[in-house]
Amino acid sequence: MSNDVHTGTVLSIILAGGRGSRLHDLTDNEAKPALPIGPHARLLDFTMANVVNSGLGEAMVLTQYQPDTLHSHLLEAWQAESAEPAVSILDGAEYGPYEGTAAAVSCIVDEIDLVGPRHVVILAGDHLYQMDYRPFVERHVATGAEVTVGVVHVPQEQASGFGVLEVDAAHRITAFVEKPFVAPPALDRPGYALASMGIYVFEWKLLRQLLRELDGTVADLDFGKHIIPALVSCGTAYAYALPGRQGREPLWQDLGTLDAYHAVQRQLLNGSLPLDPSWPIAYPVHHGLGDRRAVGFGSRLHNVVLLPGARIGRAVTISDAIVLADAVVPDGFDLDAELAEHGKWCTVSEGGIRVISARALQRLASRRRRPVEPIAAPRLQENRPRLRVAEAAVPISSL
Image 1 (tube, rainbow, N blue to C red):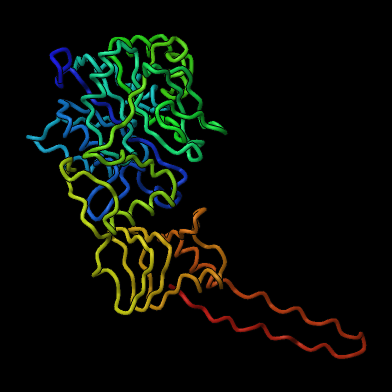
Image 2 (cartoon, rainbow, N blue to C red; image 1 turned 90 degrees about the vertical axis):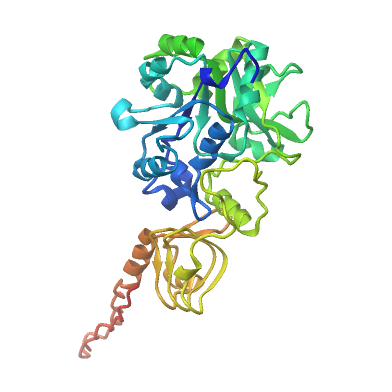
């Protein structure tokens, strides 16, 4: 970094407390940033690797929803005594509750003051991307912005699910629209729009003052909903577009849906995810998912993401699915046949990806044990003797 900005004056604040409700069964028992990526990594590791590889000196990770897995992973992978940066875990049970992204930072003002940073980088812990944060901070200082927002180019037809920005030739943000029906095009790339990555650089003194002024005005104070639009209206917000690494297209994935999560895992499996190996994470991402020893003899899996911990019996047939770590699939299981016979007992994504979890298998077992309703006796003439209709025998099978 330049002499004006060095890594010791920058504090990373990583927001890692969200569930990710569109992921359904995947986040029933753990936060979205704790989701497995490949056989060893978790989603948060990509943001943590960005912090470490950028040489930033200290990081605070804010957790809240189902934090146990995340806490254990952070302690094991990122909190070694000699580790750089120094990582602090601030859970909402102790410091919160965190009711919005900016409200969460308001809850830890005293802890930030103890570090005494000049700048803070607010980061989302639930995105998969590779980024050097140093040019991001340098651009912020050079423009004299009150906030700099990280943005990524996305095709216009895919931008309606994001916060979209319009910028002028100097990268000043002139408009910010949350999930527009028709996204405005980026000036520098026709056919694409600028989507907010949900990451920001502030001078800490300014952000501290803003949080103090807004304290109590909004219950769920949020950067994207409240603070950024206010600074855009003042003309003091700038954008920084994520550059690609090693001449490649920028890598940034939200993984907010089952289809997106499945697609990234499959890209890891076939080696097509454009990761830069010179920008490593704590646990290397290997090509291959799950443990092949967990798949029984004669089983056929097609387009399946098998999360570490899942167990597949013998002669099982599954396609287009995510099998969660808590799932134990019995011998002879055929996913298509079970769905055809017993209805929709598992979550199915818009793209047709089926989620097999312990909870879904329990639901299936319940349906398979459901007794058949007795057949109603036909109406008989009044003078004829009534025949007794025996109840049908119901075979009970279990998983």
